[in-house]
Amino acid sequence: MENIFTDEYFMKKALQEAEVAFEKGEIPVGAIVVIDNKIIARSHNLTELLNDVTAHAEMQAITAAANFLGGKYLTGCTLYVTLEPCQMCAGALYWSQISKIVFGASDEHRGFEKMGTQLHPKTIVVRGVLANEASSLMKTFFAEKRK
View 1 (cartoon, rainbow, N blue to C red):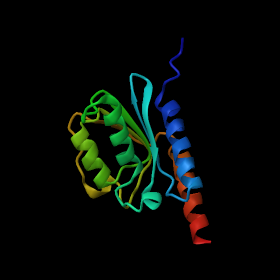
View 2 (cartoon, rainbow, N blue to C red; view 1 turned 90 degrees about the vertical axis):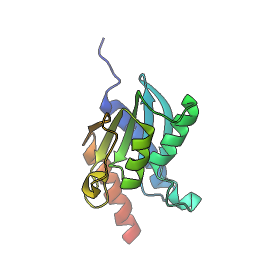
View 3 (cartoon, one colour; view 1 turned 90 degrees about the horizontal axis):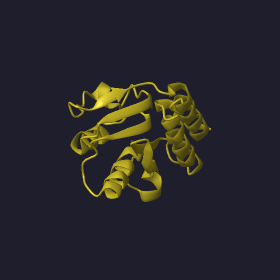
């Protein structure tokens, strides 16, 4: 039997969260945290709603996953996020010791790679999963904001 739980499968779930953010007028970034093929956290940007610059999708997902697991470390977990994490989120992901990060669209201006931010040395990074879909949602959002 074929494993349906691929990076693309879970990134589609993160994209659903990004669409929720879009509908709320938030920058459309969605994130989920998975352990053993089970989604343990879902989130999206809440910076506008909470009036909090730290309320990025990844930060919300880290907190929710840690609460679910009952501890601060996310070893064995994978974060799926529609946009490359910023340096703030990458720093939090470093401290969480997350095992894997899968992101969709690259952020050439504010992404952790551009900014030179380090992740935990054991964290595996997979780039570009459903990047076109994630990028398209961002472009649509900002085009509508500029109208």
